[in-house]
Length: 222
Ligand code: ADP
Ligand code: MG
Image 1 (tube, rainbow, N blue to C red):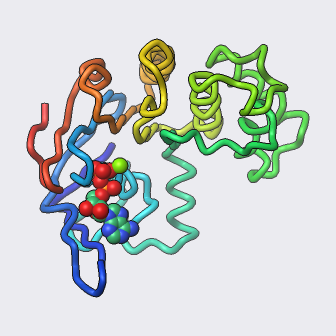
Image 2: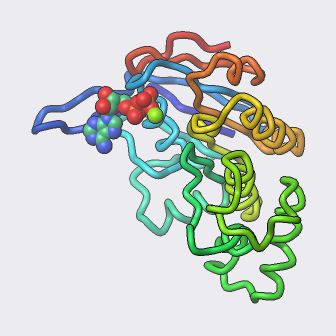
C-alpha cells in the first residue's frame, strides 16, 4: 500500500538547507498497524505529512496504492488524500462552534451530500466510537478522550484506507489514552491501515511494528 524509496527531505532555514529525512525507505502493507517513534525533531511529523500528501519531498519515490506521489497539483493531491487518508492530530482540530455531529459530518458537507444523509451517516460513525449520546455537545463540553474519539469518527466518515495519527494520545492521561487506543485498534481490526506517531513506549508496544527514526534516518524497523 505504502512504499517509500530513498526519500530525502530538506527544509530551507534562514537560506540554508536543513536535511530532515535521509534516504528513508520503508514499506507498509494494507491492514498493518505501525507506530513511528523517535525523539523530538527526528522527522516523525515530516514523514507523516509526506505520507499524507500534505507535504512534498525532494528526492526518492513515494508510491501509494501503486501510484507515484510526486509533484502533484493541489487538486490531484487533494483527490488522493481524500480517497486514501484520514488524519488524527494530538490537538484534535475540531471546530469549536460546531457540535459533535456537525464536526463528524463536515467532510460530507464538502462532498455535497444532503443534510439528512449527512446526519444519518454521522450518527452511525459517532455510534461506532461510542459517542452517540454526545451528538449535540460542543467540543468544549467533551473530555479529551471524547474529543479524540470524535476526531477519529470524523477521519473515518470519508472511508479512508489509511489512518495517520500524529501523537493521538499526546494530550491525554493514561486511562483516556487507553480508551482512544482501543478505538484505534477497532479501526485497524476493520481492515484500515493505521500509522501512529508516538513518543510513548507503551503506546508503540501496542502496535504490530515499531519504526524508529534517528535524526531523520531509519534506526530500527520491526
Ligand atoms: P518530530 O515530529 O519528530 O518532532 P519534525 O518532523 O516536526 O520532527 O521536524 C524535523 C526537523 O525539521 C526538526 O529539526 C524541525 O525543527 C524541522 N522542521 C520541521 N518543520 C519545519 C519547517 N516547516 N521549516 C523548517 N524546519 C522545519
Ligand atoms: Mg512531531
